[in-house]
Length: 183
Image (spheres, rainbow, N blue to C red):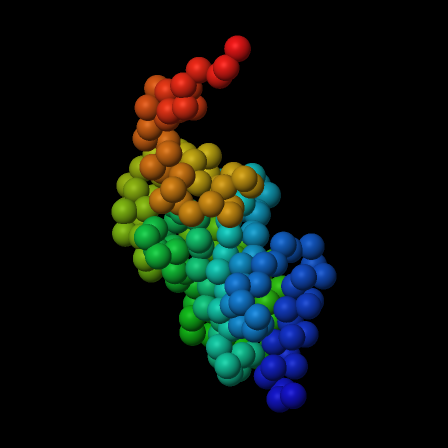
């Protein structure tokens, strides 16, 4: 077994032992989901996000690819793709870092200290700089709508289309299809 694959295995096991819910995407150890909780005392507190992690063949010498699966409103996260703009992951990654660092330090720091001067979501960055209370309200709305624990496994497109249906449109009765039951 080569050194990078041993390290990948060790880091993944360490992450699983750190009370993170980790779900493998396939048989290999290179793609998986991690359930990530918003940091305490932040606008994101109480939110739960599913993070997709892809480890390159050269991990730990090359950084993991990290992306939010369910929507989050943040200047440094692309709203559509979930891509993360984080220097420590994109430019200054070092083999000294591991997966636990990503979830216990890097992502919490990103959510606690957004950087509107280097945005992936220009609208969020502009709103944060122009109208902080409106920005904070939008973050909380996204947390309520997309980051509940029960939403973590559901694709965001499905959830939003269900919400657009009124109760009358969504209510289906088997009686209309099958008829009345026999007495």
